[in-house]
Length: 229
Ligand code: DX5
Ligand code: ZN
Image 1 (tube, helix red, strand yellow):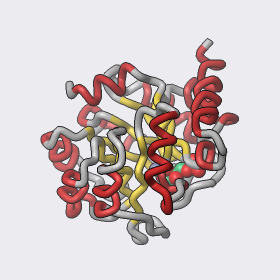
Image 2: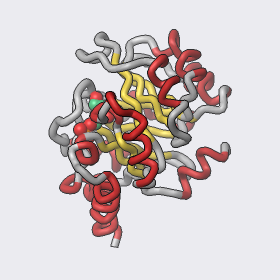
Image 3: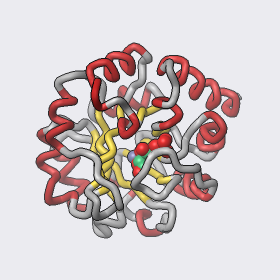
Image 4: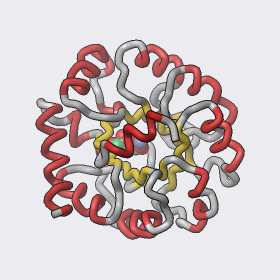
């Protein structure tokens, strides 16, 4: 197992800020504040205007972000052809690369390519897609990401149907695999996600709408604690 994965596993639960909502005009400051607030992982939402109806940023921006922080990056590729661009994301310095089963219905080869490059491999699943579609590929993943909103935009309302999916997938995972939930994760919803088995929580609005990122971090962790007791 890679050191990176071991470190993440032992620091669970992980709150991963989704950089879609950060202040792109002042990335230096944003990274410094997130480091001070001791977040263990950053979630980078990549959108191509095709797989999802929105555009964000790509490998060139990630490469520059890489110079500004040592925090691990999980690139969430909401793009139609992740295999075509994989090398760009690897060389941009991503520590984990997560792509969608809806974009790559036969993901064995791509998951293998990511892992061969010492990167963690993640598979994401949309709200409308059944767990059966990823079931046989789960052993090949380091991380499974359950979307709790339709991908494309931050600030949407959490879909409770994600909870059953988390429970189902949790039952299929080994202990050395991460289970992530993405979309509308905030103080009122994070506890239920933890109870359903998630250990990695992608949070956009619930961090970046707050003035104090440290307080946001401890508030989210406290909300997980309440249900774990
Ligand atoms: C949605 C993205 C999410 C999103 C999360 O397509 O995958 O990562 O930015 O933002 P919030 O937490 O605001 O739903
Ligand atoms: Zn995301």
